[in-house]
Image 1 (cartoon, one colour):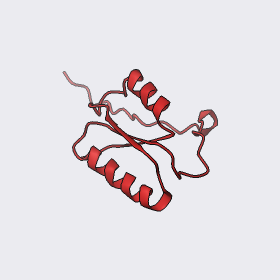
Image 2: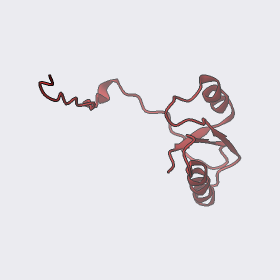
Image 3: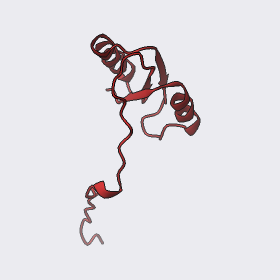
Length: 96
């Protein structure tokens, strides 16, 4: 016999006291940019479009593109390390 429905709330309050912001460069001019797609449809295209706009507006340097391949899984640590070692900044996107 079912006694009722239990509704769970998966949200939490943000705790900004324990949050850290990444160090931001003063300029993007000449920096190597990593584009990390998440594996969803159109995520690669979104990142390429954003890169082209930023390249024209801010003089970005080289681009390194990769794809973590599965939006439901965290990025593999070896891929994150590779991008961190090769890139000055990394942009990620979710497609659909």
